[in-house]
Length: 125
Image (cartoon, rainbow, N blue to C red):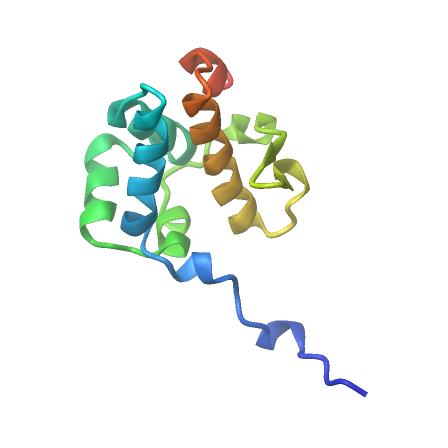
């Protein structure tokens, strides 16, 4: 019989420990390849997290990990529950882990930006 790890002993997803500053350029590159701008990516991140531009830049400079970046977010946007659909083969609203769901929500926002959606629609206005 195989051993089953107790849930509290399971290793958490490796993306949680990755520096946000190492994931951020991928978001910017994805958007810029499709004619969007770094400023638009920053707007999306700030909308989702409640960081202002200075706060976002501080977190990038401090190279905080993904968990810390989202845990320290001033105010996760109440409309983030309206972010639905599939990104990277995953249905965003079905993700159970709250941190992973928030990361997937950001992935989805950047995806929509790159696909040319109007900013008002991306920001669930």
